[in-house]
Length: 529
Image 1: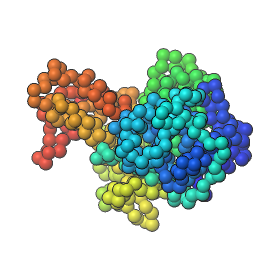
Image 2 (image 1 turned 45 degrees about the vertical axis):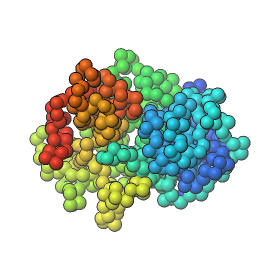
Image 3 (image 1 turned 60 degrees about the vertical axis):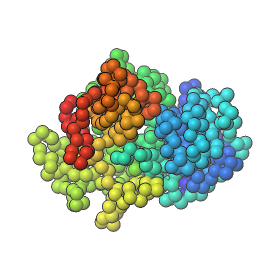
Image 4 (image 1 turned 90 degrees about the vertical axis):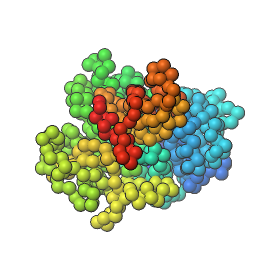
């Protein structure tokens, strides 16, 4: 393989007239899509953006995201996907750290790019309207997407298997996002392996509903890439709305859906859920966070469709484990997918014993005897974190001739090679399928003049899995409820951070529990609930 996008070229050659992307009332054939990626690649080339240069894609799920993604790869450049909910404060680090030369942004976010452009290497800004027709999206500082496209196309620039294709960012325990280096082979191997989890494998007769955001590796690799590699139709959904998704499934006969537990929880709680017909779905997968058993069973009872749970990480492109037809165990993240090795190890990297058959009764079992850290190895595992040698050293262990990645998740395994995750090793909060690291929110809280001390924890939430709670010690002279209110703190966070990161619960305290070395005892804060 020379370039990830070559897999799409093969699809175009075999099914040029098939529908690649269906969005609202428009459909784009594989031949039309391929032409546009070539025009985007040529436009980048004309502006000096090529091999190993970074291109930020700051868009929701729109056809232009797909074009820009493959067009960037076609030019030999590297995609830096960015959450369109991010504010200027949040994209500043991503653009500066990656050294991106160009950004494709939603028109309404162009001001955020302009606000940080002087502090980055960004020279070219391409603006996209909020629908498929972006005429007029151009501004004084940004070219409209359609006008940006070149008249001619650029051939696929050859790249090596280990050359970087995508550099998504994932937060660390320090709260500073880390660039994850995913190669062409990392992504291609994982997308193709994920396509074979279905029975039969994903193919040209399938339509995939794009509910998962494309800036996230799960939607990008597990859904978009898998669809484009196999000649299926990708149906992007710009904003999550269960009623819109119900309509798409019924009207188009959608066959495959990937989502996070909060989405499935929303679907089963719609007033008309029992009247909806989802019989066209042949495969439904849940990932991103732990799937509550009640949600799984209610979904299956209401719609008569199996809901399979899987597991993955940004660093693993992303899928490592999956339940699948003929190999499924409720409560498990599934078995490792093709070419992926996984095991549970203790702190000395010795394998933990397997249980005979999971899941075990966690109230009765001696979990300490079987629980360890989940580690994985395979062609899907990232090349490393961008410019962070110490983080790379901590993330990997060389053993048995393999390079094992430490997931940071704790779990156990059984004799049938099914794996079960029981907890997070660190303090990461998973809300609605998004990872949120408390430190990032805490740093912002500390900047507020009315706050002397703060801690952020995740608390159980039926819909989101976890929700974010901020515990605040007011600064001297600020009386809670009078000089500073919970709603003020929530809005302060909303103004600076993506919506899913803001605390939905704010509690004022006189002091926070700390250890002798000054660390906040977060387990006490969580146990208070």
